[in-house]
Amino acid sequence: MQFKLVPEPPQSLDFVADAQRAVPLVPGSEDDCCARMLDRTDLTSRDEARTWLTFLRALGLAEEQSSGFTRTREDPTPEFLAEQFRANVFGVPALLEILDDAERPLSGDEVFEEFESEVPTWEHHKNPNSWEKIWGERVAFLLDWAVLLGLAEKVDGEYVVE
Image (cartoon, rainbow, N blue to C red; front, side, top):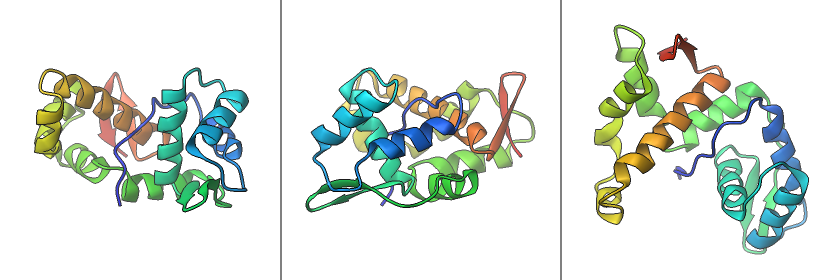
């Protein structure tokens, strides 16, 4: 299963570990987990916390069970996070392929233009007036996560694969 929700990247990967520690070891409801994340991190809204909870699931750092959400005992090393990001976050393989195939560094807008065909058709119908804005932001977040995780590099405001 691939996940689409991607939070804005933090300044460092330390925040990922902090967010993971905010998820309980004993299963809790989504509301409980989001409340803990708001209490234990600098997140400011329940929507942010919910996005982070979903993203932690994508990264293999939290899981949803029949009794609720719990954190895993995985160590959020950069290598583990990069592997999980590539395997479990929608669009990452296509985005990295776009960068890899490019003959020069690409701006975020250029990457989005190339990525547009990957956006599921139903997303166009779900948000007919805003899907480009939503997915433009999502691609920007994916690019910055790729940089943070060492899968890409940002040079003079443009992106390349390392």
